[in-house]
Image (cartoon, rainbow over all chains, first blue to last red; front, side, top):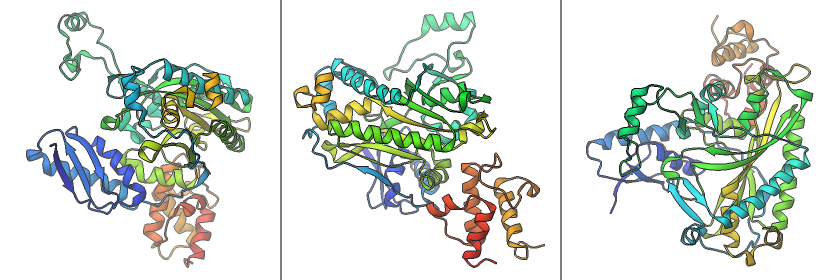
Length: 395
Length: 83
């Protein structure tokens, strides 16, 4: 039996924050294998990798810090549902496709949160990719290709480090020093946890990270100059990286995932109108394939320091809506995409100006390709014979 | 002059200056959200926290979206009994 620790939160956790607090328990301490917040919000259970010993007080203090930071003074979000098609029958499939995909060799785990995908998943993702590119084409979007790395200075300039420090992934290389490189070549090995044994001072200072989003690259490409033509629609697909610690369990939550974005930059009405048009066009596609989903207001996974204020702000101004597809096997939903509006945050911060000199507004629609395929398989199963005709024929 | 004896607009300007950590002279009666780099999303939420603490008004998603200028804040406070 794993070691457990029960904690009574210093403030009762309201229902709308139960999932949010639970997801942040993953970052409290490496000794935590899993954390659960009771739906009543009055009990937290931690399942631990090893006995606590003298660390119990320290661990409890950290958990209470998370609770206080996220719950004290929290403002109830304004929930807005733009579409609700959760009751669609979909494919009548009720199993978790993850295990079957592993069994068939369609999925192989390289490390926690990192998976190689086989032909069934690859083809299904391509099918969705083509549809998302068609959406981009319907707006006349210009195609872009962005690097996987993003400079640390870029993320600092848009306050990413204070908002999402918990999920950053850093890129580095060996110091440019013959002795360091020679030493690494001769003596480096991985331990039983897959961790390199090289001394930390072998590595150069961090100047780049693995990119957490696609659209940031476009905003930096447009920075510090007038916006060409006063408005831009662009699209790109890219690898994105968000380390979510022990929450990385299946295709539902990956460390390394792929995101297709359609990005709008221009005046406020231009961005909001295009975001809404994109939602309507996607509703048409999802209707054609019979996907069971809902579009509802949401918030980004801010870390505890800024969580309360940023979430309240996003909610008040309805900046983010998620496409939440039904996962029948667990009677739950999974965010497979989102419709986002950033107001003029990036326009101001990166000095992207409209013809009248005002800062540009930005927004994007983003689709997580692995999650999209996973949710589709959770609803329709792995046998293409049971898939909607539109997908089966184009697959 | 104490905070309570100040004219309502001046009290709101004083609140904004402190919440946004800017000199009070840059907070004019016409100031709106986004006019200063400091009045961004986090700055706005600090303004809301200060409004709650100093004036005892209840902050909700609706008020966060509505109270985006000195003028709107003053009007809201007057409606809620602050002369």
